Image 1 (tube, helix red, strand yellow):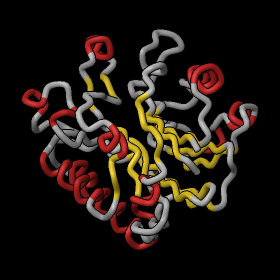
Image 2: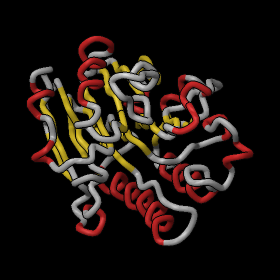
Image 3: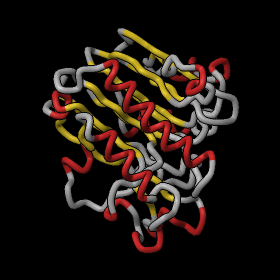
Length: 259
């Protein structure tokens, strides 16, 4: 099973890029997308169906939104946490596929302080509690994937001293992310590549992608039973290092599992 997480920064704006990538470069079994930026009725279901995917969508006009497209069908789907407050912004989608519990997450960007910053910190706590309440992480195959808008360590940002205290690299953001991992999740990329400097997001400005001035904020987190069947995890740079079709500001992370 090949699972990818990809903040597409508008699925309709990125449709031709996605089709080229999936057909020509990297056929994915389960594609988890964030920031699709459209309501469900505007999602390009037909285009994905033509590629062999069935899609579950939890969308929102112009902002946020998550989708899971699967070539392997769905055993279960849940749109949102089941909490009206947290589901007002469409940031969470769950599916069970071939016995694997997959949680697709688009964490808030946040701010340096104020309500958006508090909301981001509380979102991580909500996600942590939902996972603990719904799964046995020690014994189930669970993937928690997506754009978490937090870089874990200094190796995960292009200039740690410059970025210290900025959004995505603040001490309290990193702390709540570490607390999420502590419930029994493993950062698969870092587990497989302990010393590799590899980013997943680069600003559109100042040719950041060509300078490799980025941050690693997109993750495949796995429970230990899923980690044991992980064969490979990598960042696929092809969709990002493009001029045409216009890329997202993120690159997808791909995990390969023996399932």
